[in-house]
Length: 192
Image 1: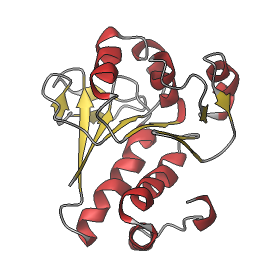
Image 2: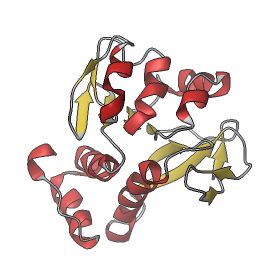
Image 3: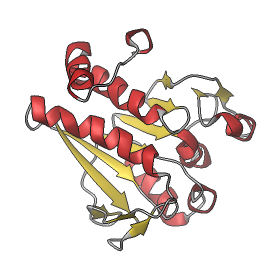
Image 4: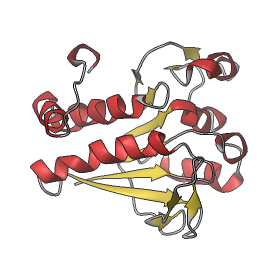
């Protein structure tokens, strides 16, 4: 079973984490016990997202198990939380043990702030390209960019493509396509 941690924080953009959560969890309806997707937060307190959705984290930084994939969504709250010492310590504690460090939209800044994107090719929300480039990142406009153990996705809705891309990497193209079919989403095979 692949354990995926999606970090949430106050003012996180809902679709940034819900889209990959849905795709990466749905596989279990087709192939049981494939993934365990956890919402991870600094504490067990409810998190209020940017549009008002209140979320109960599954685990806190202190109770988070070993992860195979660590995913950071973006949103307005990232400007404060990307520099938070507890989040940076969490990245440091997990970066060498995960298979992939992943981001959606401006979640790329969590990885950039931790020095994980310097010299890498990555993407983010279109209006933040110049800001991300200031971290020594080769920024490209693309739905999904894979550079070594780093996978980044562009703006908000790119979380769907990211989810399918991860499924393809972890379980193969046929299973990723089957999940897409089941949730009635047309994936662009050429980008996977």
